[in-house]
Length: 227
DNA sequence: CCCTGATTCGC
DNA sequence: GCGAATCAGG
Image (cartoon, rainbow, N blue to C red):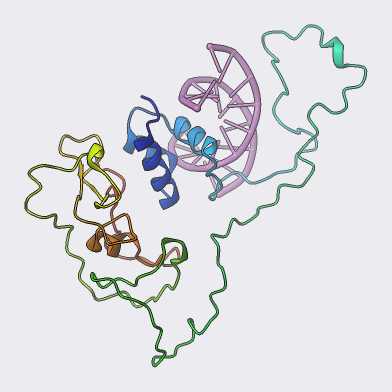
């Protein structure tokens, strides 16, 4: 298989969703776990808790620098003034935390102030209207709002295929990529968003702190397949 | 052992 | 650019 734009997009989404490389590989199909990780790195997205931490190994800086097996007879040329060919990662591997922009949020937000006006525009679907970039505001008390299982209009007779996607129709995936009936929502988008009103409500749910369980995980792709 | 992600390096 | 092989921690 090859990395089509579509598959890359899926990889991105799932990787950021926290699925493991194995799960992603299984989901995408046709690729190995390593392939997924390799691709993820090449795409620039990485980090995420890795079991292996930055360890300083003065004794064993890293694996054997080069070809210890196919025989490296005489590396003569550089013996004179190597100038440290592999200058160990000098700037100690800084964890960098990669905090996803916790940009100022103090405001009057966190304050338990029930009467706070908190003027936000509400999308027709009831979701808090906010730019995709500034999704924040946990608002813990899980919305009692019932999320109906994505109900596409009855006229999906002509399913929206990847080729039918444009800026004005909802790109929410219906079903799993690769399956015969996989298609996209196709409803008119909520202006300013890539999804229709209904799916904006799904896509832009406030990200609760990890560990906070929310019964029905909003499923783009439905999560790991159960096979 | 299993899992995880990271890295290297031949292709 | 790709991914198997390898490494290394849990």
